[in-house]
Image (cartoon, rainbow, N blue to C red; front, side, top):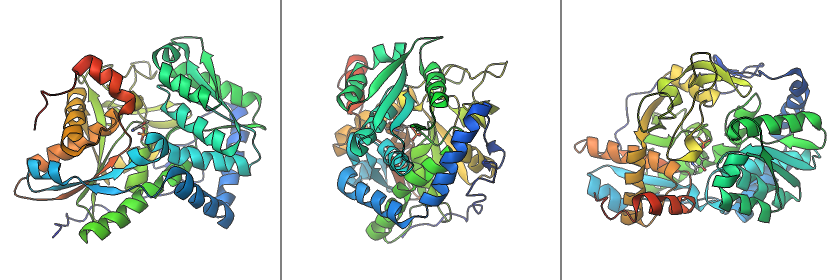
Length: 412
Ligand SMILES: *Cc1c(COP(=O)(O)O)cnc(C)c1O
């Protein structure tokens, strides 16, 4: 029997208003040159998201190319060791390319093809978004330019190689600190120069309207599948659904499936090494309202309002802003946002690997750690906890072996 939690507050606004706002957050804060190309994407998406042909083609792609639906898996061994709660994992690590990001990249690629675009462009930090988008470009037979800071290019050689093997051009951003922020500048500059043949494809539920809505809609499939699967497996809705939050796309896709249900939703942000600015990337825990990359959100910022430095052991989570819908869901108290530290994630990484034979991405390990904490906390109050396992840990292997070894010391 599932214990249904006290009715959470009803979900509030689900679609952004005509100016692209979820409550106080979101909107379009871009130079005038970018307004028209964004309007074009918005208009095309409004039509295509209702088109039978578009939806049917996306379904076929998900099934035959991506390998969806991904399974939901009962982590019975891990659950038993922790107490009487039951942990379930939505296996986005089994989605083609090994993470959830391909869900929105395939949607963006299909949108581009319907709009008659020739080239997909984006920035990438650690390279995960670049690899997913290069994969989509290859599938659709489109060109692909990925802007990447020169410093990141040096650090992320395997992902640079992947993008190039997939046929993408990796273009170095050589100004400023030569990392993600400069890559965003370069990508947007290139976009403004040719918005007719090119389309900008963002990597999470961030950026100016309509991207937060569009990326959420493409990720919603994760929540839809998981809800159906867990109902079939347990006969009930889960008590708690949890996911890690960087920009917020894997969490938003999962949560979107449960917003109207009496289910607690927990977003897990990276607390890194501590609570000082620069030691973490827990935007909603420590940030305050500001503007970054064309939209308003909770933001980790310096005194002067510039985006602040961030850290997480999981490079996919180290973003100083966060999706506007998450900010709205925090203010309306529909979703609770908590944190897990670098150490928590490392521990969960090894424990899930040993107990279940699943090596998680360090990003996803933050959510696994939170689920383990919940299961331990309440031995007399068993709950069903559904975790979005956003990706696999192969990309983190070299780093983990070098810094933490094989993890034999991490026991339950
Ligand atoms: C990029 C990434 C994330 C973080 O991005 P969100 O937009 O917050 O989902 C999480 N997990 C994995 C495996 C990633 O590659």
